Length: 102
Image 1 (cartoon, helix red, strand yellow):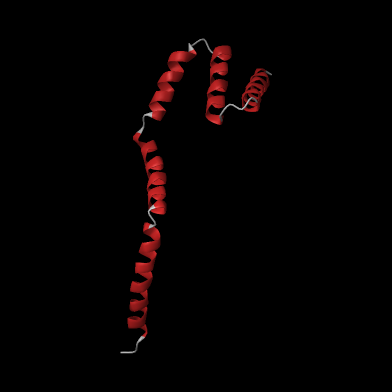
Image 2 (cartoon, helix red, strand yellow):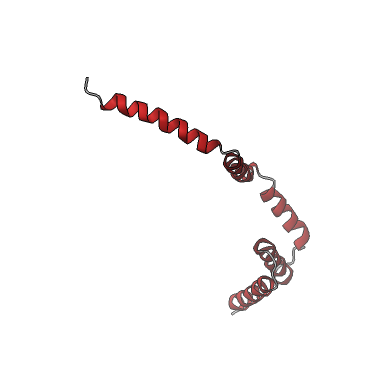
């Protein structure tokens, strides 16, 4: 019954935070904080800060914003449109050369 009780508390806190327009990531951290306060004897501040910093300072997370930024740069400079025109001309020449009988 204690698992069911804990699940009910977690869902209540999650829906309360999401219903009050808190971002999803912050709402999940709030649920974790409430869970550590109510169900463990460990102080939640030190444990959560260490875990959050370890996950957020990873080099793995660097690739995603840079990938999005590169796509935005290519879109705004119209580089892709120019590149596709050049490739289309080049491929048309290759296609003619490949289709002629030797």
